[in-house]
Picture 1 (cartoon, helix red, strand yellow):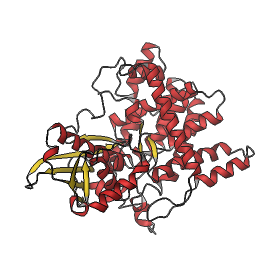
Picture 2 (tube, rainbow, N blue to C red):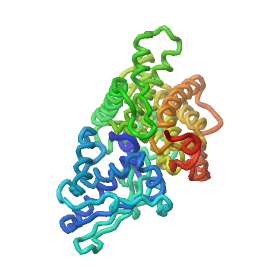
Picture 3 (cartoon, helix red, strand yellow):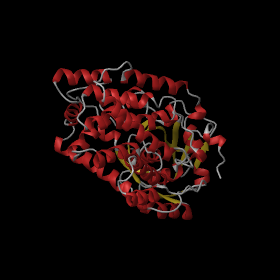
Picture 4 (tube, helix red, strand yellow):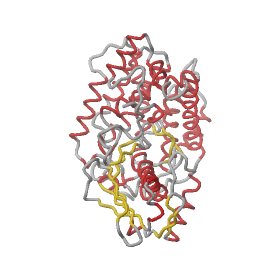
Length: 456
């Protein structure tokens, strides 16, 4: 199985990669399947059933909205956030839905979208079942899909096999572990970013990969800028006020007087991204939406505060961070519903730490050390969003994760790369910890802050 770094970094919309982008992708895939099977023209009704974590926190994560938009043919990467509200008002006001943007059918949302909060499908906590019915109510097609984190989606018959997002190609330097990654780089005399770029070269020219990654970086920067200039409250019952705009103004006015200004800026970058994500804005999964602020914040730190920072360094950062994300995707999970927040913020911290070392021209061993440190000190981190919203503690947690990633990189670069705990060992530990973690701490809002802090 070959996963691209461009699968790890995907452009989409907030607030959640697993609960918003994944369900939108699944709904769209279901409609495309109906079209391919020549069943779309016969479909008179579509029913959707949501299970497990999707049912428990889906309303706060806008899963219902994502399903409707996906059924109409929208994809996260192609959707203009400005059309979301008008489209939803049309669907809900008329009780009519345009399947794939083509076939209009009656759609009674309270009856056609059901939330099974006390049931879990066997494949994953983020389970969905779609059913297409003919005019005589006979079943034309029924499929189950799973949102496995980071916007990745698998149909039930695909689960456990190759990822739907993974291309079945032969790369020059295959790796399924950090040990294999480091070994291949050592054997062929390559830096990690060179190895990853060579693997990406099977799918596209090196210049195209570089261009795509710089576009990812541009989208991240645009997200930060929007977050710096937006005002008001975030959507939802918590009425959380945006903090990034005020912090941004304070930092501009303060200049460079404070010795801690770099940390303040990192906090501002991370808050800006995750406030935009919470508002349903355009973000980059890195590797998820809930943890989308960490990589942009650390990369922004690199560009603003590190002497000699360049676009080449940003490309090295993203190539290596993406490879680290691939290791977690292959050997554990990047789903908060499976691993808790260690699988989101923890993985993003690990990715950003390793990416920063690569940008700063650290050794391969220092990259691996930084990535290991980044996860080691996030082990056991729970996912307990208050009111099921990707706001508290999620937004602030990204700022903490970004600062931690920078410190992990600095610790690694002060050493020679030798250390006792390997990245592979810490990934295995994260997976085991996630499997042992109670489900109430895995994106269900049934434990932790979600039950100990009043919603309003």
